[in-house]
Image 1 (cartoon, one colour):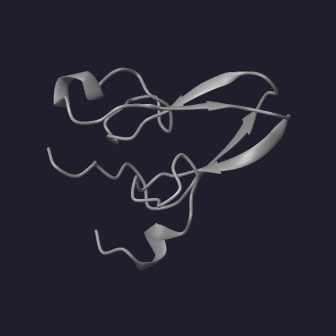
Image 2 (tube, rainbow, N blue to C red; image 1 turned 45 degrees about the vertical axis):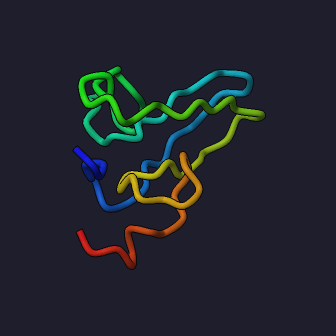
Length: 82
């Protein structure tokens, strides 16, 4: 697997909690999207992206896995052909 799988072509809107650690899935295969469940270990190339929330807020986590600023959505799903 050279490219990540695309579980959805829009962001996941997630309410995060201050000081809580999240691990964003970069391979797209996790069954707990947008977060990692360890599936990437089977593929070898991909690693989860650690994120620690600095405040309670709602954030847009990338769903297409093509973002230039992971783990957040940058609109790549809008101009990338899938």
